[in-house]
Image (tube, rainbow, N blue to C red; front, side, top):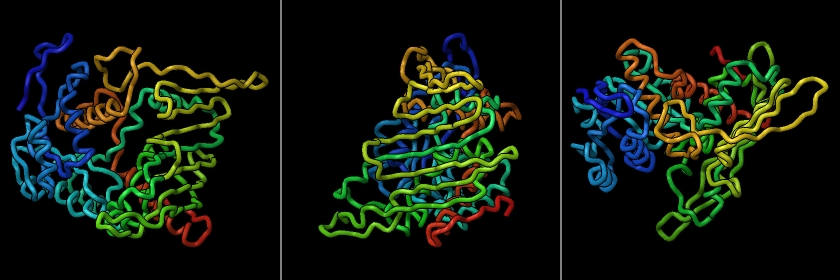
Length: 401
């Protein structure tokens, strides 16, 4: 089915309506619904738009929100297999606990539905390998991993700098994703604090793909890792008047030696659920012999750069990053870009790639969502990090295995 949209010179353009099902109707499912509702915020150059026609959650109250607020939703299910059998659904957004990834993702792919799934693509490496095998068996299905932060305009500037090899020799890299809501010891326990549902990776599995998206995209693969993993709050209220043990890691610092282009350099990657003062901070810093640069969502309008010439002064320059996103929008460059905007850009990239795949054409812009190969790379690193922490030593990585 296709529709017609007329927007800023795009009158009469035929637009493919990509019909979605949502499995897991929690926080991020609602963010997708909001992004789909804001599709008119894009400037009309895309030949595809999403429409959520079916939803599924074991909790009927969660699907009820979609039925109330998303007019395109026609059917609500409690069994995801019924949603997969729905012939109208072409693509799926799936946001469920990590222990459910392997079974549900494999079933989605086998059903021939395109998939944008939440990280980490499996509770552990074995589960991730099951998903990878399903992807290999169904090359006609596009599968991508959710990771929105690289779509901030300031980050896109850094990506261009890396592509142009503007940094010279890389001196060091630091990237992280920190928040602090778990600093409160009275916060009730949830599935992310249990190994059975979150996995032994803990905060690495929950947050790490966001941190690794760009380093792996740039080809900066850790040759070794020394992991420092922390359990800070030992127990939390269980919601029944008692206390339950927190089984998973709260914070992780991974000191890596990265390898790329015949050179090696230090790369520190960190994922923290308990980082005082940080509501939701994603950042990347790259130091090089010709240029250094950094971006943080603490200051989402700003990019800091330090160009260097031998013998010349060293001075950081901080400039505002205009609202200039991967996919054009109706918003003027003088305004601020935020989290909901990055979500919309990520979804534009996914829908654009699905449409491009069906037409045998190129995407409107080249930056893709995180790939299954990058998700598999995160599993290799997290598995090595667990071994490093258990043995108290540096673990060498084999990316060819």
